[in-house]
Image (tube, one colour):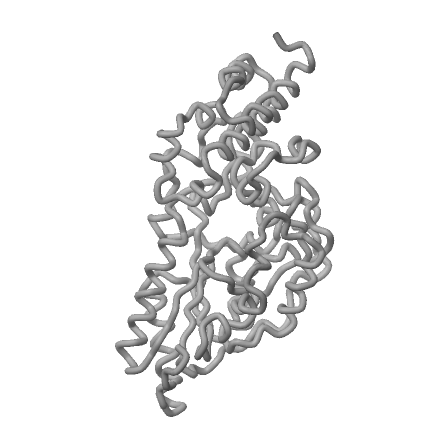
Length: 363
């Protein structure tokens, strides 16, 4: 957007344009849209302290882009506004606790049961940007859905879409936190929305207390290296042994800090068919998923965020889940079937899992 002139519009025209943009966002399936400037406030320094403490673990990309992560106008020169949107994803009729409490079933974070949200939101945001361009000549925009370094929760908070809770997630008082975020950077000087000036968590620590691995160092401070979402998705090597028993049947991501949040009693179910669970992932057993061949994994995770963990990571996670499952001959036979898996990573976790059921008395 650099070297491109900013369209000149009067205040009334800009206000009308912002209102039209919100209407269009609703038509495209977004639950809410907010607009803010490009200043990150205190969030930039907080990010740097988090990185300096090493809480990002192996996620080197978190530190790779310097201040571009917190300054959109450096990431995309000429940016004047950040348009932030949210879209609900929790599928109706799929209670999480029922599955979490059944140690034979595999629990996947609810956001990952359907189509990859990156693709859904990116496509809709592009339509939103194209709409802006049809309204004002000289409009430029760029879309982001976890595709570049943007402090999405910080800007969403500034745009009035909620506040950042003690679990580091964005929370809205009317719908909780089960929603995706996306951003559109533009050179249009649209009027900004009022930010959430304070949190509404009060003295509640439910989200911190419920974390299976106690990954929170304190309110608003997550040590990703202990977070199950990090361990099952971002971490590419072995899962630390002391954390494996704490993971239960969570094989891709974790929702506990949201399930425990009182604000999510107001959660709105999604109307997006793209987020409807695929391949019975909301009810599949650990044994069923552990039996997938690599071809089956690639076929059944096509267009799914689950692809991110890779086949070896998928089997690693499931092996841990099976190690934590109630002991049965079926579980043990399922694990033994992969004792000679080509991947050393998988074999290591299979042996650990078998040890949980049989101690050292293995044939």
